[in-house]
Image 1 (tube, one colour):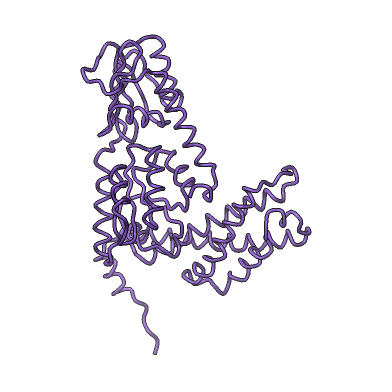
Image 2 (cartoon, each protein chain N blue to C red):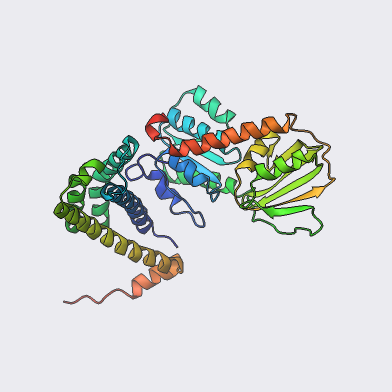
Length: 144
Length: 241
């Protein structure tokens, strides 16, 4: 069986991770001194990805219940990475911080994605009857 | 295809609950075409304002003649939009208020996709005069070779999307068929295939004639169309609309 809430979380998480990876690709390109040309099209892509992330991140993190832990880190990346050219002009220290914050968000999202996929796999092996039966008889005992 | 899949996710949440349906969410036309070129999908659902959705779907139709396409649009739209969608074999779903009705409509569309797709069947006879893989030789290359050598016979192409046939007569394409498509539309479809197998049976002639243009014209037109498809993948979305 499929769980609506679980499927929604996975869908949102996948969309967020896709954009988060695309942002990283463009940041990496900007930091690569062997690639001197930054085209207008690349800058447009960067702005579009950033715009999507800016409007969606808070909503998605809230839906996943990790808004408090990650929104600050995500905002640091989005605020410091103004453009590909802007990223190229950051100091080494700022670049390290940017990468560390990006990685913190990416690691957490990746971990949650794995957990949700594991739940989905577990649910796929159940039908509605066994699911509710398990919920009914495997509830934790309440302490009084 | 949905430009705002995080906040406008009514249909996506319905499709996500379907069993045995693999879906991929894309935000723009170039992304959609790039995914469709991988040949893993039988259908495309475009969500958005009616005129824009039908316009984008029509654009996709030019490059993917056999693809099942539906547009999920707000309830009120022009009759002109309806007519142009019908002309391009695009199903319009006027976004119903209830989730149940939406689910029924989307199920109907999804079930219509499975009808003509079948796994690539083998059954290649060793006496066929030419056998190969489409990932090594494209349909354009093998047809060009056969037409130049004035062959007559039947090409059978077998891929995950189904089987199709192209009949040659003295180096010209006489008839082509793929599912419900016939003639030049079927040739255009086969031109895009990059996965599957093909074989040629010498001497099998078709009584039916659905293609009457010379091979060279077909080749140029279809290669040009293929180039346009590839260009769409790289053109920014802002320049599409």
